Image 1 (cartoon, helix red, strand yellow):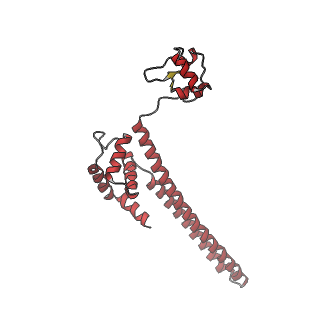
Image 2 (cartoon, helix red, strand yellow):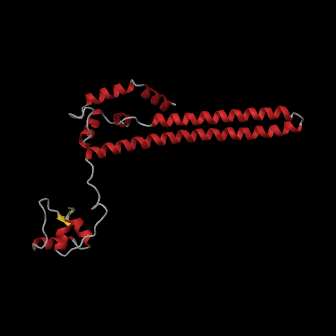
Image 3 (cartoon, helix red, strand yellow):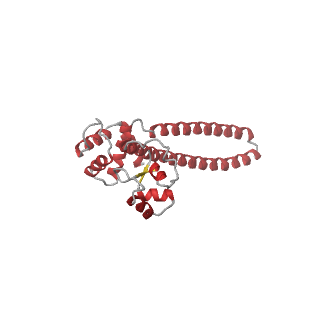
Length: 220
């Protein structure tokens, strides 16, 4: 059953809030224990509220699950942006190489006019083969970067988010308070977040090969 606050019910029915309040005082409109009014009660009192898609939507997810999903989406979005920036740098390098090839082709044409056509064709073929190998290497590197940027577990996602908060200047106490306030479960699913378990988790993360590789990429 859909319930609304007095202000929301007034907006949905297209009437003033005081109009509903007068109906409540007169006993024509009933409120529930939380001082909210249902769509059915509005209809009985002669007020017809417009239904929205939210009325037919499934119940919202728990707060902790929503926070976890928001964190995962934010981490994935950030890592995808890093991959896109890397790909843009790669394509920029390819454009530079193509410009160099164009200049070399002009030189090839001049050399052909001087009677060295056969040797020039061999050089062009070698350049084409080299470009093919370069394009193949770029594609493989891009795929590897994309795979490495994809988080493998919710724990790694949360660790990455905690690490970014630390880089932004947040203390471990502030991070623990934020996680506890948003209802994010600990690694074991029991207890609360403290500076101690956050510190141990970050120290263990720094020892992993992926963390070393990510730090080297940021320095570059």
